[in-house]
Image (cartoon, rainbow, N blue to C red; front, side, top):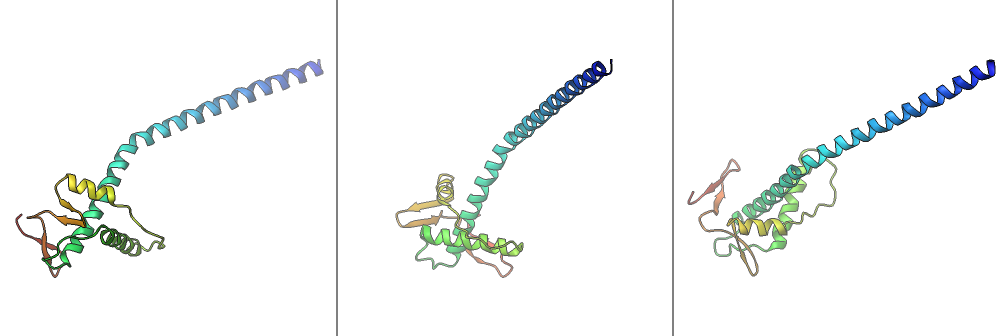
Length: 149
């Protein structure tokens, strides 16, 4: 009887252990599915935010570069714009006290989007703000004054 009782106790222990592990694995699997589904729902918003950020950085680089250029040569090369975009990102990184890393934003797609939206003109040797949307100069407070708006 003692051996039989020991065998039954051990068998019950194994059954409970296997069932418990099975339920835990099922709960973890369901939790991972829920987490993945939430991430998949967030992915389009994150991609849209990334596209907007790239376009804003590209447009800001073009604004800064065009405000420093003489009116006779409003066309700015893509290399200069990429350099200015990297400078803007470096300034933002330094402002929030993050460690500086090698920053080289790829803004080619953003420039193409800006051209499709009619905000810039693509020339053979660079880009230019569209007519009527060009800043005249930076005001003393850091704001841009616009003509034709």
